[in-house]
Length: 163
Image 1 (tube, rainbow, N blue to C red):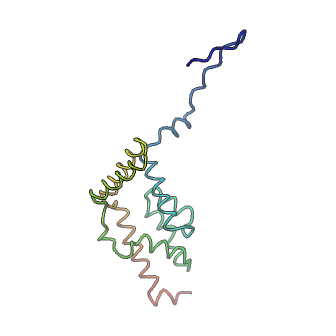
Image 2 (image 1 turned 135 degrees about the vertical axis):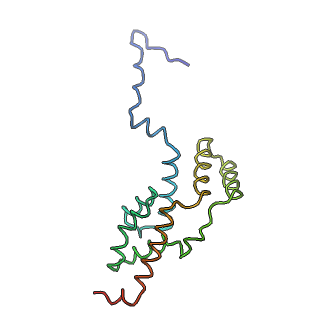
Image 3 (image 1 turned 45 degrees about the vertical axis):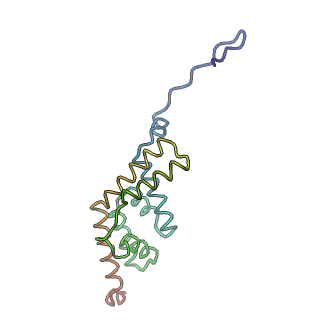
């Protein structure tokens, strides 16, 4: 229904054009949706143990960048950094990582649908699960291996003798 101008008044001004920031916010790509989910997962598993710059690197799916920050901290004796290294090392199972299966994917999408997820959210979830189904990225596997190597170095008797 169109609003009529008040008697003797001027018609209301048209709504201002959306700013680029507003357009970017409304055009929320699957990539940013996936990033937010990775950030949520990182915060869930790591709590406050990861420094903000490490969490940001993990959110951006740049685990090797996170390692560059974590290794010196862990070598200096920061137990939080050691815990994050252990998280990146996947419990030592870098080469046995199991991607999301097709059956799990269908269950998760069905669950989201029955809980009332909007069509756009379902599309983004499908994109995210397809990414997860593809398995870890080469950088993620390499970060896992390097983290495992760093943890082994830190546990060695020689590492404990360093001043």
